[in-house]
Amino acid sequence: MPHTRQPGSVGPVKKQFHTFCEPPHELELEGGGRLGPITLAYETYGRLNREKSNAILILHALTGDSHAAGIYAEDDPKPGWWDYLIGPGRPVDTDKYFVICSNVIGGCQGSTGPASVNPATGRPYGLTFPVITVNDMVRAQAHLLDHMGIDRLLAVLGGSMGGMQALVWSVLFPDRIMAAIPIATTAKHSPQQIAFNQVGRAAIMADSHFNGGDYYGGEIPRSGLSLARMVGHITYRSDEAMHERFGRKLRGKKALGYNFGIDFEVESFLHYQGDSFVERFDANAYLYITKAIDYFDLSMPSGSLTAELARAKCKFLVVSFSSDWLYPPYQSKEVVKSLLVNGIDATYCEIETRFGHDAFLLPGEMDTIIGNFLANLASRGGIKAPSVS
Image (tube, rainbow, N blue to C red):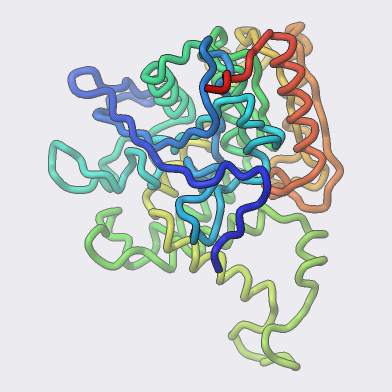
């Protein structure tokens, strides 16, 4: 079914591309080695003001992409993943702000990643692609902003892995942002969070079609990637939300089958999520990006989160959700505590919700909180909306 454009939508948008770090000026990677050339896919919404001071960078989560808002065509069946938040008159108001969202390096939605062609061999990188980190993702984004002539951002904003990137922006480029809004995130992964990601990676690599990551042009590791997505999706929903939506309802039958087929609605839902994910995401990219967030540790190299966050100069709005058991509120509170110890202006909001980690992708209280925070930030900073031509 075509998407019916809602009031406040940015409407049709176009994916753009920027290529940089051409040899011999490759990006030096945190884990060693170099990468270049690099292409970032990105989208923009709204207009940049004359002072280039109204730009907001949207940072996507694990399996997200640059398509944060709008539609690609009038018959597009699905708008961008944060469409309800971004647009004219919406919390991230494109009448006031110039909004940018790029796909991270290591991804598979237009940016350079393991499925990209290695110019040295003429073949897809596969597992020869270098291991990247969240810091590397942010450094690549800084190159994009340089290309756009934007020296300082009004805000960086993202949930989950996007929240990690927002935190990195605050310490790697403290003079380039006025505010950071990390949502439903953490300063480092717990053993449980690493464990879930390892199960997903193991499922992919155990697939008979994985072929050491060199499956391009042949059968892809469909079963392994689908299973990885199923495991991941379980962590995105709270027990209450799963019970409310599925309970123990049966799928297409009136009685239990007493076999190993699909009996329950929740089983069918997970298989659907896995199968649809395979059609839009690359298995190698899943390996690389989950490894990047497992390596992420904002307390390094000193070992002290407070010491590392002392470099930040911006204002913070930190948001968590009460029923999020993937990134539980205590992890956001650890960030806020370190910010306050450093005397940094930080606002913390824990939102009561039954929707778990997925709450940051759903309309709710968060929208008003973010909208008001940005409006106050822009007002106090004397940020002007773009003039009408």
